[in-house]
Image 1 (spheres, rainbow, N blue to C red):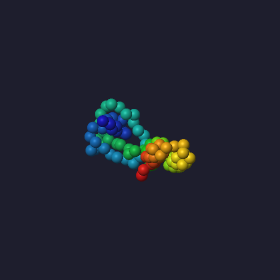
Image 2 (cartoon, rainbow, N blue to C red; image 1 turned 120 degrees about the vertical axis):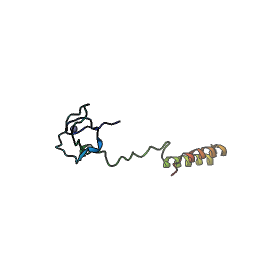
Image 3 (spheres, rainbow, N blue to C red; image 1 turned 90 degrees about the vertical axis):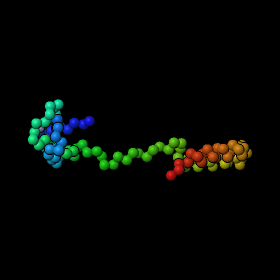
Image 4 (cartoon, helix red, strand yellow; image 1 turned 45 degrees about the vertical axis):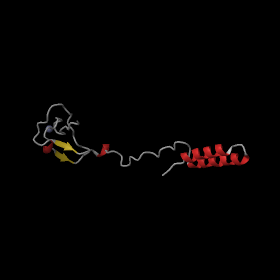
Length: 108
Ligand SMILES: [Zn+2]
């Protein structure tokens, strides 16, 4: 459980309902936090300082394709097709390889 500390005295705030929220200020003087309970009538808490706001966009980078790009897969399918037509690949091998490659195509 996260303890809240009073910005005025640094003590641990017991009465959360009595907290006086203040807008964050760069010049805000924060008392060093102590494990002692806050004795203020109105504990002061500055809302999240703008300096430590989390970045607005936490979009993860696009996941890497698990096996080559769609373009690569299509090129491989084309290649096995040519091998099949050239007679270096049996129909079964061609079908199996093609099915495997098609199975790797990203599906939306
Ligand atoms: Zn206090």
